[in-house]
Image (cartoon, rainbow, N blue to C red; front, side, top):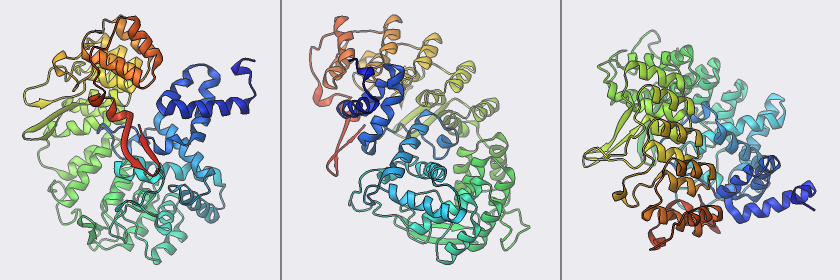
Length: 515
């Protein structure tokens, strides 16, 4: 009997054990085998629980919220896994899946709604709050008693966030009376124990004006709060409500967040004592507006925030905005910023340790083809970073990051626009060519394209690619390289670049964190 003719249950069990053998990245490649596998691999991967300990490497292009406003394949994938775990987990000591389900059940009791759609929505909120911030990823790992980590969540805080989103005003009033705070700082010195974004942020994001006004009435004009890092503030003009408003791209909600009716001077246009159009960017409200500017999803909202700040706006200062929106796939904002004349490269770092990145690299990293097309059309350099500017450290070119991200379409676009297919040999292992990354992700079609376009097979970097293929059991890749005459003259396993991301060697519970 052929493998594909086996009963569905038996094929599923075979795939589960195959996934456990191949681990996450190589298991996902099985989806390319045939149409049946494209649907059957994901349930097998979910059952394996390998994703509990799996984390993608963060290149710095993430921006809280924007990734989830523009939902793409990766976000949909992680969401479906979280829904699966929340629906099926029964052990409350395993991460916070049971906590999330119990919150969803409480919402359903209040609303009289069906549980499964509610879990689906609540999981989007939980996913955003955890995976959009690097230090919250332990929410989805087995509980670890290391000092400073989240040992347990506050059910009341969690319920207040979901009440804000679903506009459950009676429930919100009850929770406020119990002492739960609607801002990101809460009643405790830290908000690390929250499973969801702050209530004021979710009220603004959902456009629940009555709920937002209720929260504004509940908190003081401005109050210093202790945190585990020192002190911070919260008040009626809260950073979290501003973030929710700009993400909603709703000018009415934005003005409500900036000018709460319950202020002591409700008719004033000042912002925490600073005149409109003359806000100090280094002040607390100024920093809050700059942070919100990065998340603005419409040109109108972005322009209004610039108007609030006032002063001279240097176009170079907005290049960071452009990079973040390019990475988020926000084509409208990218076009708006380019029309303003914003530069496509962004200086980073400080004196003595300079860096440079570009909007094109950010778009390639997240595989936003439409943004890549626009940037190339507007003159973005497909060879950005190939020759390091004096005093600058540039590690990734658009082509290498597109190859590492697995986008064959973008790799082809960049090559068609003149991208250099290799990287300078003298960099040794600090920068690796596109062919190395195509081999690392086991992308046969990309490997073939790069070879057809003249990718070099000489040097230690390609030897390192063959060593990677052998060490990680990428048999098809090793076979291709050996067939082209590549041999390993000197093994470098102890300092091999793939060791950084293949297995992260810090024990967690009874295993390793796998990338």
